[in-house]
Image (cartoon, rainbow, N blue to C red):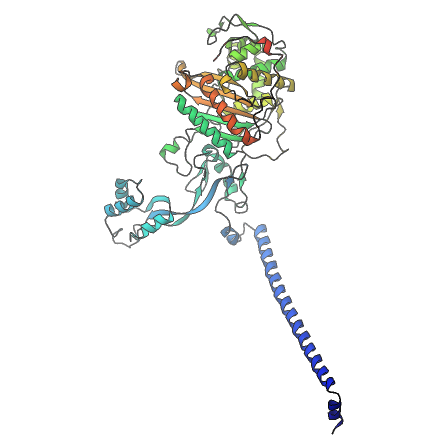
Length: 580
């Protein structure tokens, strides 16, 4: 027996131990190999991720290079979204089908398998709103073109089953407005060339089509809830008074942000047909009006600010028209022998307001109106902005008097909204905007009135609604203030007594003004709903009374009958009477 054999025989455990060591070593080698494989896989993934990050960085740095953004563009919408201040979509892009007529689909032979009349009849079954005769003419012409834009996928399937190769349904990117006609004059629309027309679609056109910014929505200042309430109540007021049009705006007095802007009748930006195209004109920003007695508080504010009105108890004659320059300034009816300033506002006296303006003087009234922007186009992003009818040169005495109560000067409702915001917010004018302003970022603006003047005007505006011509605008618990305005429209040979512009300029809540609301009706008629009256006290004031309770809670303003603005020092000065 050899020594090795003897050793194995004598010590069998040594052989077993050696095998176990071998097995452990094999396991360690396997684990090490597995770890290396995992590291290689992780390294490969890291390399791929690094390449992707570098690619994204290159696309960001060299986005204008030919073809550099092809991958990024595929992941982005063809045109950026527009949303309201709360992120609610107002305009977005989506893929859709269209119906296209291609008469060369079958080569040089007949354009259609069936006759044009047969095909037209089949199409009318799918689209009952289509005109059979026009379709027959179109299919018989042999001219290629759209038969219908934006069709549903199920309609495309029905057309496919007709077996007509000439009827094609290419897939295209369309602009869609999920809120329909809501805020149409703010948004505008996108034309067939892919570019915006009117509204913020035009203002933001380059930005919305910029691939670098398509994933970033354009945020507007408007609130769709407020917009819907304003449009609804204006539509009701327009219907009740048989008016030819209406306009309205809700404006933040501290920032200039527009929360709602409506011009009626409106249009549907999803379908710009002939009827819709006729309503594209924006009455809020592009049409100028003589807004009548809504100017009277501005005149009184200018006189208080200048110090020509210091004693509100002082009385002015009011029972005789003012004869000047061959004209007469008179009131709708007599309010007695004399009125003080609070009574003149409550009863809306032209005679007293003209006397106040006469004492103030042309230069000072002119300067205030300029500071309010009444001599310039309104400040707003929208492209359509009307130029005011501004009395040129040095104002004569009669011009000063008539401007004081809103005649002889024509501005847009947006001008008026910004002026009222200035009058109640402490005296600071700020430009109106349709872009959302972050907290603390409001523009500094410019001072027009002293803070003390603004405080006094808040009292007077509240008195007009509490005791005067604006009583039908009152909304319990919301402390509404404001002023009526009913102005005859100018025409050939003078003013047309049968055609009025009725306006109410409101602010709420008057103890801490937050929002201005303008409601205007163009040529309202006296109806049973307005007690046969055509003036603002009977038709636009009730619109305010309905709008405020609808939007107040949405904006964090709850009705509170325990709060109010102190008018105890002015109340004893006021008698009774009625105005416009």
